[in-house]
Length: 472
Image (cartoon, rainbow, N blue to C red; front, top):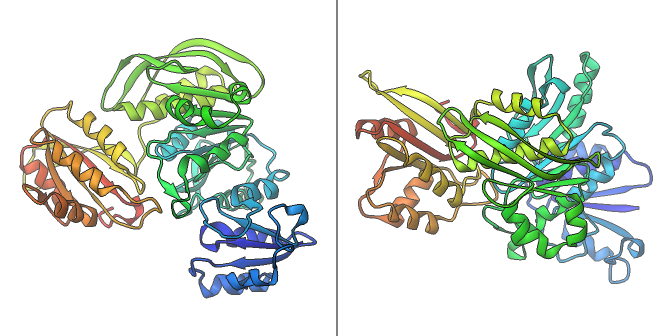
């Protein structure tokens, strides 16, 4: 069978390589964005993979390339976000399932969503750290062995093909060390592969467009419903998925969560704190992968200084319960979660040349959006002498921020909170707001400036990969 893997930028090179190891496949790869390095090209060609461009389709006129794979002489594999004018037979997500369904024999949790993916994965790691978890997230690939976190690879994407890389890295580690993976926790962009015992959709906070405007994030993430059990935030389930999928099947396999709405997992008696938030959890008619139904309530505490952090915690709780995990393990794991270095964390600073302490709440995220900014600002406004330092870089994710909406929100704050802009994003926002804007090009100097203006609690929102911040 001839197979064409489209888009070597977002994991296609890995998929093409895996197909080349199988019998009866003649493999072609299309570097549609022309980003392949000469080394990767050579490696693919050494494996017998032929590099082609769009003219390759000229060899398959109508009748030879059918939308039905059974009637097609070529199988076309492309990412779900790819706007291709030719029939696509399998998405990258589906191919990962095809390639890995017989290789991964341990429980799998997959996490997708617009916001909160990495934080939920980090919380799940704390809950399952005694089960030798293999973790794939936007922070890298790691395993936990004897309660020690071991990084196997940094700077990895969360395209579905990275699941293959993560598993193979764990296999290599197992051959060197006395280690056997007990559970996989995979962060995955734009949906799930179908490998998951429990697939998680954290939220559709902003339903951004993909495929050159022909599709959107919620449609892509719908792939997660191939999982055995699906965990989804209440709003996304009710407003989107319950209207486009078979409701009878969905009700049998979906668990929802929310802070205050009718869901399978809800929170009440919430006491927010900067370093620890305590709350009660109510569980109603939750379905587990083992076919059990859970009705219970219990108390929990974790790092969740605002509502959207608490939503991440509820997503984690709902996911763990769906796996059939004992409540005491969930409570203990969340208690041990102290925030995510490089995403959401709190630190104390001392102003240069003085001894006055200021508190900095960091939200550093390559995919930060306007909804997240609004929620974070509402949180910081509750504290004494608040300030917002906001900025970042471009091109850190495929999803760019809505600058017009962000500018309108900041203008609407009036004098409620001190705002200082920084970085490329900050300069662009400054140009849109124009009047009364404070700007500093350096992030550290911007934070210090906020302190000099009298701020005691500074919210730093910076759109960036944590590893890219030169000040770290």
